[in-house]
Length: 387
Image (tube, rainbow, N blue to C red; front, side, top):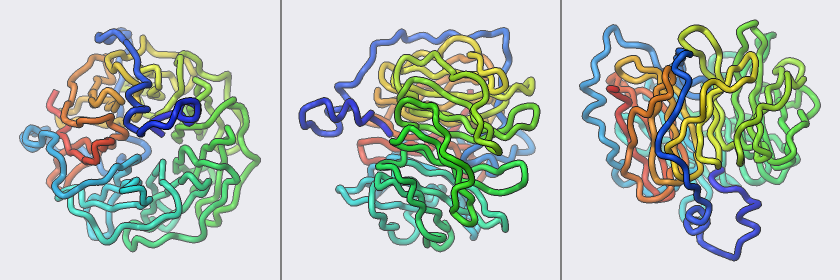
């Protein structure tokens, strides 16, 4: 979520945009990173790893022509975005949106920017999305909302799959999709009760007791695997920490990861070029940080450049093969960082209000792209590279 509810509750009644502008930071414009450690990323684990198949050779001509122009006729405030594949072969963007105070989910053709079908009506604002597949290979997406519910959807039909999961919380802040060691598909949710839950994807039943440890809302989740094969969940919280959990047992692994000085709003998992598995986090303190997934230690120095909260991070590979972190911020910009060196590669400007969310995907023609959405009610497509 783009703004802490504690901050919202403590202020007089203001517009959402005014609240964002009040919550700003002053940070150095330069970035520092440990150049002695070489890193890379194979794919954006949570959303588009199955879409990012390398080309036979890198040709960035397509990406160079994609300049961040807003999709025409799109006027929705998308608070979350995920990318998956439609049954007819189209790459589909899914957005959880607050449109004129009506809560809806939209599906979009990533190639054309055209809406697919009618909006999916939901009972509350969808604040978080994740994509994956059921055991039979059927693609699904999962939505968490401000009524404390988690719902599985079929992107091919636009219909819900099974009944909504009642998490018992007031707000679902984060969802992720993963697979346990026994092959069972799971949904992971984080909520305003400061807890993480693990649900069976097929039966929607909870598989273990809630994972407790965070002292505030759980705002960000990712699933992955350590180098020894242990399946893990990484959670980020308003309590400024990240925690690593065993996905099979629910046991916390090691101590909390400390370093951020404000709410952790975004988490992703990837892999370095030397095989080291990493966590990438974004925070209200305006920084992006890279951590060793096995040891929980910080790799290098924080990536600084945004002068407002970091709302979203995505991981992927550009058209020229560069491993990248993409971050979006309340400062109205998107920044692209080299995951190998921590170097700032590009600042993307165009949004006129805070940029809530970003995702990385690939069009049918092979172009690698960043999709972004902001409070300005626009969705924009940017070429990912060359760098």
